[in-house]
Image (cartoon, rainbow over the protein chains, first blue to last red):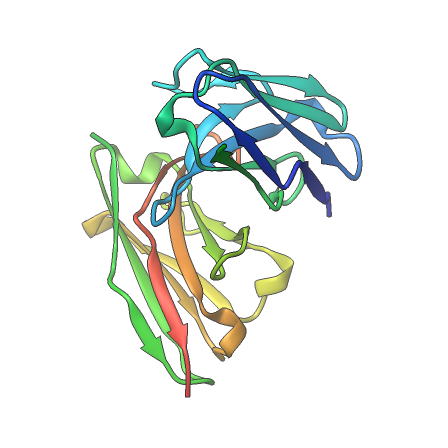
Length: 107
Length: 121
């Protein structure tokens, strides 16, 4: 099983700032099969990024994904009020697993 | 538009079973795998398994082998997930989600609203 670790656990930022979220896998993720999801309280997750860097349909270009091997990053260039949420990474190179999440909160 | 609508909240006693439905619309049901995940209160997401609606083929996560059954009814474009032998640790919100691609990719682009299953004596 590929175990994913996300850091930081909580990120306190102000609207307009840049957010950088990290996801580290316990082993190399084949073909960069890594996705990112956003989840707000009481809602289902929303797909943001797949294949490490491809934006899903309808996702604003302020969201970008990068990385390869075992280290991946989700960046939000300028935080909008609606971006404050929990973000999960997920690998699908093997049986799918999710990271524990990073909460992006308003400072 | 693509929609996945799940059945309502359930309260079950330990040892009982629960069956959650996921009614789909807005696309051809048999063209995309349906996956099931769960999220315990305040916790992260856990993939439980998937079903291919075109032929009923299933694959379950190791943690759920023998306790989860996924089925589908193509006549009503609906997938089902049943968990047996419920225990308090199964208290969670259960989600169905559609695979991103017609070929199995294990990326989840459309999600149901979630079904809260509470296991309590």
